Image (tube, rainbow, N blue to C red; front, side):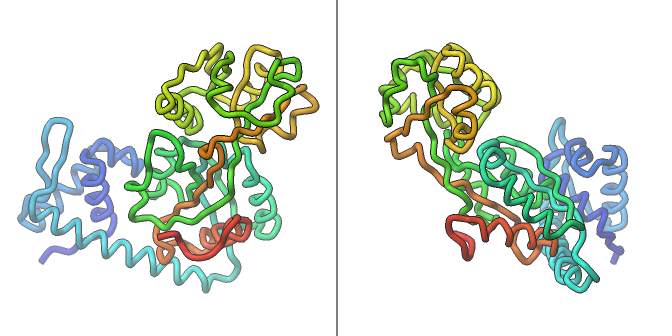
Length: 310
């Protein structure tokens, strides 16, 4: 029987996951020709066809599906072994890739990470901002070690996180912001339907919050009069401050700027205006020690702590 090498097995699994050699090559940062060559050589050694190459798509043959299923188990066991052995390394060091939506980055997470960096200076954290769907996909595909996402909006991630560990993180409270010169500036609370009667400065639908507001607007059969549609919280704050319209942002993203920008925050009475950010990772047993350290630190800063929700 032919010998198997781990690199080729990982490439084969990636090809099946990505349903294409070119996409798998980009993910693994090598050329498509090199991936194709390795798989062809493995097929020759085994005397079996493992994949069916079609235009724009690659599918496993029955033999290929069997091999990929077993390869996944082997690779997961090796990841677990690496994580276990890393605990015996003299000193905890390494890199942790953290992927988060905007709500996490503008919240308390930066302070949490600063505390961690002070306690563990040898562990580097690489933070990237993504939308909810991209956060979950990045963790599932091993591009990120830890993901922080919002479960709100049109995109429902429950199905996508079924094979991940999920933990509760911090609570987000959305508020309506307006200029102190706006007619709503005397209000302390209101319903979204009332706010929808005014000119809005909104986030683009590509953001989790933009998706949420689009869904709520549709469900309540409302029409938002968007004067501007922008991509960042800072732009929303600036435009609202100028008196162009009202906007909706996480309270923690607005409170530090109310005095400087002359902004007034109004509590939204709708139940959807308060929700919890979630943390997702691959199965805990497969995590390296640095990733476990970051995860543990974040969980101590949660509203609730403990085991994964599922």
